[in-house]
Image (cartoon, rainbow, N blue to C red; front, side, top):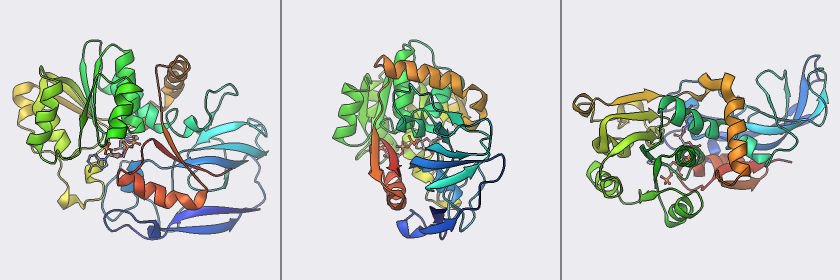
Length: 338
Ligand SMILES: NC(=O)c1ccc[n+]([C@@H]2O[C@H](COP(=O)([O-])OP(=O)(O)OC[C@H]3O[C@@H](n4cnc5c(N)ncnc54)[C@H](OP(=O)(O)O)[C@@H]3O)[C@@H](O)[C@H]2O)c1
């Protein structure tokens, strides 16, 4: 049988464009013993995938080869099985990438329960972004009731999950995002206590002033999804002994190493005794079920909301990924393939 894939055609020069990717049709061999054939239902990409494409960026994960199928979490259905652990018809969540069909061994796959509140959420809030929010907030950020928690890109899937879990844990959640629609959703649907518009706050001083207005006594924990001047502004607003979770640095993803902003406020770490720690969600793989069980419960009882931005077809993925990195997507970007 034939399967269509989107592959990396060339290394992006700065911000990726759809022409950096190419559609290919491949002939799949007869299914080998021990493998399952999965039809992908929803495919997506994480902004951090930019770092694996070369031409700028740097990642904790392996760089992608030219001609390789673009990576990304996905949801699919088993349509043929030569592995006794998997039955035809079962729904799986896994890193299937931008492909219509994949042959996999089943290792590292997660089964989607038949009674799930949402199938597509297993490529979104119940997969990498939601897990990043959950473990970043709790295990790296050590959130506790009463904390003031500041979150950048708060309307994105990672940030929105982290902020709502912070609220569930009894923290005060402050979200930074851009645009009236996102800010309204954060306040009225996701229940953030306060929101800050990023638009127009292009300097450390301007952003610090906005943070100071809604967190006059300071920030206990900053969940950083973006880096750049927002990070330095947050550092300026931290309370003594504050904690910073480094989840992502999207403001620097398209920059060459010499052009990255990084942070210019390290000196404040001394006087304020701050702590800053990086997060790699895969470190928590043994505990994914704990997080998804908790999040499914919160989705069911209405305390955890999520948004999706769904487009149709594999061909739409390159433009969707590029739009996500430009900040033009509100919600988890997903392509429905079947
Ligand atoms: N460490 C890990 O294990 C791990 C795992 C998954 C994801 N992540 C990281 O978590 C972060 C959030 O991921 P996500 O999937 O939820 O995506 P996301 O937050 O929706 O990312 C896109 C958003 O980033 C914001 N943004 C874009 N350019 C920006 C800039 N120059 N300065 C400030 N903000 C900018 C925009 O939101 P606004 O315009 O509303 O600000 C944009 O809509 C990403 O950095 C990602 O790489 C980390």
